[in-house]
Amino acid sequence: MDKDPLEDRAIPEKALAGTDAGLTRPDLKRLWRKPPRMDAGQLLTLCVLTGLAVYAAFFLFRAVALIAYPYTADYGEPYIVNQARMISTLKWIYKPIQEPPFVIANYTPLFPTLLAPFVKVFGEAYWYGRLLSTLGCLATALTVGLLVFGATGRKMPSLLAALSLLSFYHYYEWGAYCRVDALAVAFVAVGLLLVDRGFPVCAYLPLFVAALFTRQTMIAAPLAVIAMLWSTERRSEARRFALGLVCCVGVIGLALNSLTQGEFLLHTVVYNANLFSIRDMFLYLLHLARYSGFYCAFGLTYFIFVVSEGRRSLALYFLIFSFLAGLMCGKVGAAPNYWFEFIVALCWTLGLLWAECHEVQGRGGRVLSVILPVFMLLQIVANFHVPHTRYDYSQTPTQESKAQQAMLLDYVKAVQGSVLCQDGGLNLLAGKEIPYQPFEFSQLLYQGIWDESPILDALVAKQFDLLVLPFDLSTANLSQERFTPGFIQTARDNYGLVKRVGTSFVHTPSKKNVFMD
Image 1: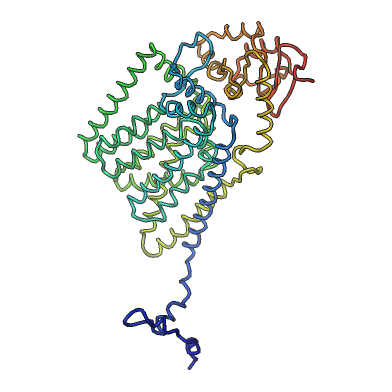
Image 2: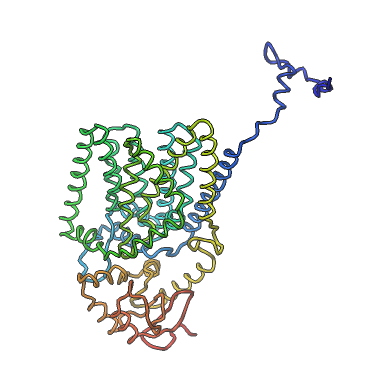
């Protein structure tokens, strides 16, 4: 007989004391046993969670880099901060577009209103808006995990769903910007959680109202709630919610419209209704499939699975309505943020599908436990990105870009007069008024809503001491999405290039380089 390996080991008396029975040799032998080996499915799942955790860390890395970066990272950021500055001084952000400065407020006012106290205390900056957006993304990820856990009671699918949200291209690139989207989606996600947990209408209604007054297009979730309540015979609750939403949004909206003499509705609806391109919509759909194809396949599988069984869940309706809302990405000027709600739905349904598949018994269950993580690993590979490398989705701020922006800001501060920049943040940080919002007013011109004569007259009169543009005016075939042909030609006739800094081109009314010693 083999010798017991514990025979030669003295068992300390303290180990045998402390309870009536103490620890026996068999107890100690059990403590020495190796943990059971993971099967293939568990090992693959661990790899998936590790990959998603790494991507979540990358999201946080980029978010922190953006919060610490003092300059503009996205075209729309300075106009949000400018609105917060106006609100902090008790000025309306919705004003007639026929008079300078030529800027509009694209969104409902809650986000810049929340930033206004920070402007009052810290001055114009991006960090507090980016911090708020980052917290919104993290809150949304946590809420998605709670939605899955509430439905399944399982931790692993919940963690998978939460981490998946932060691995998406769309959230990595756009989530931490000083923009309205992340906070609006966070309001929606928490509202859906309260609906899912059976809270009364008065608990979740304010969250959907807040979402709509953060970004006016956040209608997918309210429609999903109404559809779910109606289809599950909770029709009285559906009517109360719909009526409450219409009344709250209507009363607040009409009050704002009256106080601004009709400008609130014009800015948030009429001036925001850019031309729609079917081609652009399909390009964004292809982009979504390229970076999130397996997630979309999981969402489609969940849709087919639930509909075939005749179930009607909140996740199902939100998946449908958020996809339809995402199709607005065909609007000229759209960006990855148009898919934020749909991504929440994809992560939510991924967690639910994962939990359902792991309930399957027998050989089918074992096969699914391998296939699902394999597909997820393929998705992780398709999403491959690393900050500060050639594989970065969107340029994470660097010391080089910081130095270039600091140089541009010095040029803008150095001149006494007005400056027109595509990056309105240069005006904002230099303490100068933003005179013109190029993309929005170009679109208004194309729609026949605005006459650009005032800005062209200002160029002819050389009222701007500097033009800081993303192109050299002498270059042919320039993009006309943000600057109209009339603007480009008039500026070309009256301004000349004097300096290039990174991707920005500085022009003055004369050919002389005013920055030379």
